[in-house]
Amino acid sequence: MSIDHYRTLAGLAETRIKVERSEFLAIGFPCTTDDQFFGSLQQIEKRHFDATHHCWAFRLFAHGATRQRSSDAGEPSGTAGRPILAAVESADLFDLGVVVVRWYGGVKLGTGGLSRAYRDAAMEMIRAAQLEERILYARYDVEVPFDSVGVLYRLLDPPNIVVRSESFAEKNIYTIEARLSRAGEFERSLTERQLAFTPH
Image (cartoon, rainbow, N blue to C red; front, side):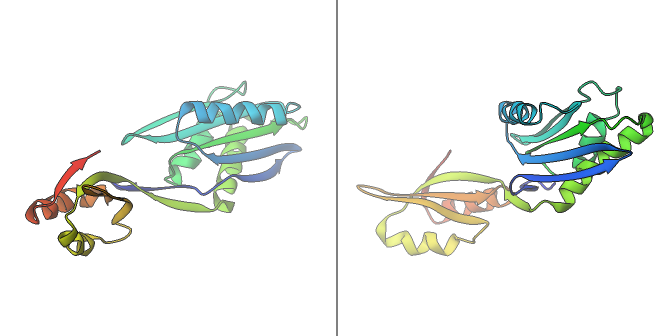
């Protein structure tokens, strides 16, 4: 992940695999908070109430810092949650949750077999999923006199510097977002052109 962009899931993704008669359903979904993740986990547990285990991991990009957790959900320690999280880390994804639902098929897989099965289920889901780039922006309100509108528009450079909204009244206020890696340069350009701005 770079300083101002990362990859995540574009939407819900699911993949099923079978290992020695046990069935594993990997479900991946976008989320940005713990509460969002646990709300989705609860729904999955209700929908697949007949499953033996609901093991999980999430990895969030929380205000510039990585936040991640995982759970073996009753499987032997270290055989489920950590391998699921390892699959997410190896794909370098953020702002997503992964739940791997297991229906036990009567054949014990051993700790190594379990770890591989949970990791493989998560990796198959990620391979099948549609991914998208997220760009992190700094936001500004910029006060622009009518005779300087052209000056502002020459500073725009989508998707790095974009207009999000415009308000024309006693003062013309443009809400602009600048990619974090370009924010300092954008602020200097505004100052040089004597355009007043307020960071959000």
